[in-house]
Amino acid sequence: MIEAILTYSTDEETGEIPLGEGKVSFGRGSEADRRFADDGLSRLHATVHREGDNIWILDENSTNGSFVNGEPVRPNGTILYDGDRIKIGNHTTLTVRIGGKKAAAADKPATVAVSGASETPGFPLLIPVALAGFAVLVIGISIAFIGYRAFGGGGPEIADETPYETETPDDSNNRSENRNASKTPKPSPSASESTNGNANTETISNTTVETNNNGQTVTLPKGRYQDMSEDDKNRYVAVKAEKIARIIGNQTSDPIPPEAVQEIKRFLGGYVSRLNKSKKDTCDQGSWVSSDFTSVLNRATRTSPFIVRSFRAKGIEPQIGLYVAMIESEHCACLTSSTGAKGMFQFLASSSGDYGLDPAQRCDPEQSARAGAQYLTSLITRFGTAPDSVPLAIASFNSGQGNLSKNLDTLFSGSGGQNRSFWTLAANKGMLQGKAGKQFNDENIKYVPKFFAAAIIGENPRDFGVDLEPLSTYTK
Image 1 (cartoon, helix red, strand yellow):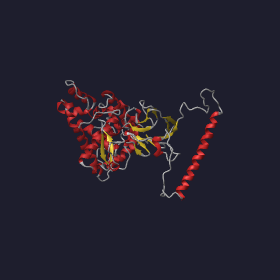
Image 2 (spheres, rainbow, N blue to C red; image 1 turned 120 degrees about the vertical axis):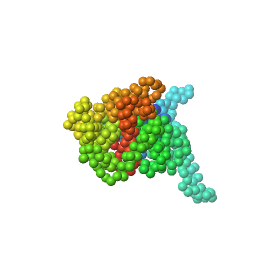
Image 3 (spheres, rainbow, N blue to C red; image 1 turned 45 degrees about the vertical axis):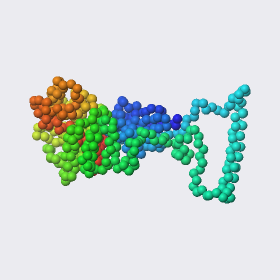
């Protein structure tokens, strides 16, 4: 088997990881085989697989993506070759080193046992001498043949003829890739590298391929969202929303219903329409005024580091906090509502102390982010960490824990077989009763779709013509 090693480098350490058969995973959480202290990594970020001489990398739906030589890892894997550089997280790089064949265990020093005789140390020396003589003979014949062809053979002259290459059992499958003896043989691409059986280069260069929550690959056109057809926009929103659902749902989630996708698309359209507004950053006015959305995204790059650090410290994906804050305040550090709520996460003075936030510090983005992380941690604990439970926790940030619990009880106490999710609540909104039901139908039903819309544009700003990185990557 060809020897393969990953050499890694982070801000804190360097080292080597031998690659045997099977796989090795990378991330910052306990589910990863190799963990690095890099806050740009997801808990389970990427996995390198090996089958024989084929080696490839898969991105495990990470927040910030995985890159090989600067190119994003393809949805169903990118084949790795000698010298490839893998970038994961903010400052973790891995270099692929693929060496020659390992010596077989049966390979031994030159002593040969002759049938009927003892081992004779001197006898093997006759073999290389004989081989050397034979080689001289072959070379002499070759020279004579070449001279005949060049000067008197009468045959046609052959220009740039490919030199004959001796094929051995070890390299017979790699002849075309081993013309230069200094290069390491590369594994042939396997089915895992191809997006589909008939993909052509031109189509792939103008599209991107993503995976939805059913594990199916979906082709999306490259270019601005605003320039897409309605069908392409529908596919884009569905795929990107499901990717957000996987990120906040511990890398798995059920598909989002088509009706919900349309609601998300509607709110996304509202954000997109504000990108074209004249630049007007109105945070300093203290109360809710609509800024142009490019200013909102730029503002969020300054407050995101506080949120990312605070939420990761609680073991929660930072996207949850980033886009709750987007809905609550559009990242205005001291937004003040008519109810008296204040700050990025809109805490009331009467309840902020429950989450370690001094009412006088609600306009401090760092203190507010810590309190927001603590509150959302408690909500996720209450409603569960299952993939479809996290949107319920997000909804309860808006409605209050009591209202959402009442609505869940109303819907699920007398019916079985339904998925306990926010989307099920939305689909059965007519069954909800009382003040809690009215609050859901008037306001809460919009909150989660708006969260997903904010997350789509905030995590993919360049798809909307905004020259920024995803907000979750701003950590300093």
